[in-house]
Amino acid sequence: MTQSKEPPPLRCEHCRYDLTGLKRSDNCPECGTPIEGFRATFRPGTPMQQSPTWRAWFNTARIALTDLPRWYREMSPQLDHFWRLDTRNHLAVLLGSLVTLVAIWMTVLIQEWNSVRSPYGTGMDREMIFFTGMYIVAMLVGVTLAAYLALRALTLLVGWILIARMNGWNAASRRRALNASVHGANVACGIFLLSQTIALIPTGLTALIESLFADPEYAAMVWFVIAGGGAVAAVFGMLIFTINSSVVLRRANLPGSEARLADD
Ligand SMILES: [Zn+2]
Image 1 (cartoon, rainbow, N blue to C red):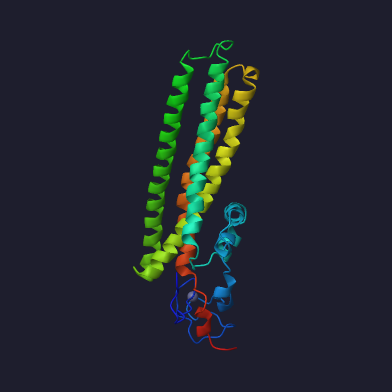
Image 2 (image 1 turned 60 degrees about the vertical axis):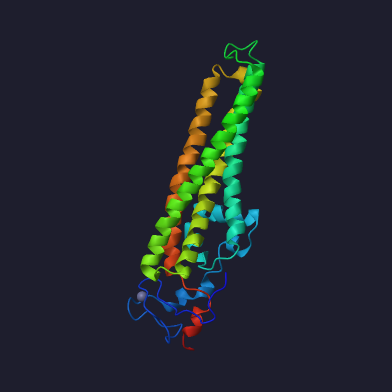
């Protein structure tokens, strides 16, 4: 997306005072915060804003979870590669839900295969389990994707309201809100993907060394706590991180705005 040729005014990131004509070494006349810290060049963009690769996508989520001040400091209000980044978010939800659900499905199948010597077999027909499982997996992946998109729409709306109330209902506010939404989804999808991957361990254990468990339901419970807890954490993560990035981005100066400052 293209930015306006005319550099926007540089504003105080705390009180929104217009700093045009002041020097870099000055403080904000309204609230006294040093101007030096508001220079747009101090916001190089999060790793995924700098290059839309999977590696950068993972790194951005990791920084948000382990070094929050750095995430706030680096996030740029510019929005490049939006669709490429958002496609990674959608793929992460798809992969996270598909892989774990298929793993459970396979676990049930293997258990049925062993049901001759296991007291936990349901006695269902194997073909029926195969096709019923496929149907349930497809349905649950669809439900997960729909819930994710609904939550995205909700957090995007909340972020847009937060940003537009300060900057007006215009295209620039919408860009910042979309940017905040992509960052919130990045953290949430990172939590979701990580928790679903960890949840595969008890599922895999059940399938491979079923005989070691006194009761396979124990492994199912462990899976439910990790996978379910991860999904709940991802939902709250998306709400919190989208709101936080909206608050950062609504005040962040665009690159070029420092040109409005006077020379020292
Ligand atoms: Zn100020």
